[in-house]
Image (cartoon, rainbow, N blue to C red; front, side):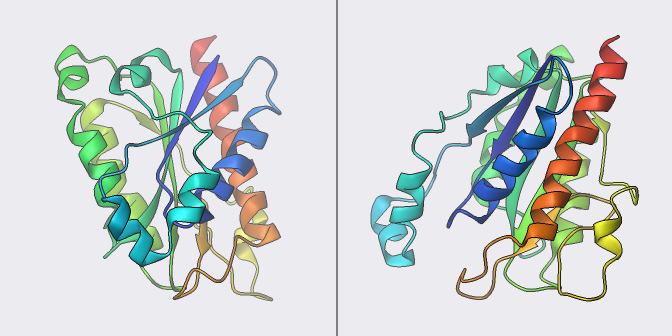
Length: 203
C-alpha cells in the first residue's frame, strides 16, 4: 500500500512535519511512505532574498512529484504552508495541473488528508486545510482529518498547532520556531490514521 506525502516547504517546517507523517505511516503493516515535493515556482534570486536557499538545499534529496504519481497512490497526504488563509501558490499550481486526472476520475475513492504551518497561532491553519479540502472533494477523495483520539490537540499548557482538520505547526514571524514535540506527534498520528483507513478501504 503506497501512501504519498506531497508537500511544499519554504524554510523546512512543513518538511519536518512531513517526515513525522511518514514515520506514522510506517507504523501500519504493509504501508509505504513516499515523500515528494511540488515544483518550486520562485526564481532562485527571490529565494535567496527570502533566506530560503539553504532550507531548499536540505530538501533537495526529496524528488519532485509528477501529477501522474497521484493516481498510483492509495492515499495522498498534502502538506502546505498557509498563504493568506489558503494553500501556497506552488501547491495551487501543482493541483491546477491535475485536470487530466479529474477527467479520468483517477483519484476517486482515494484517501486524502492535509497538514499545514502558519507564522502565527491564528494565521489561517484551519482555513488553509478546509479550503484545501474543496480541491480534494472535486477529485473524489475520501477526506481524513486528525480526530480527537489524538488528545494532544486538547492541550492548553502550551501554544500548539493541530485541529480536527489536520496537524499543523506555528513557524513564527521569521520562521524561528520549528515544530514542537506535540505538533510532530500530531503529524505522526495523522500519518498512521490515514494509513490505517486506507488499509481498510483497500481490503
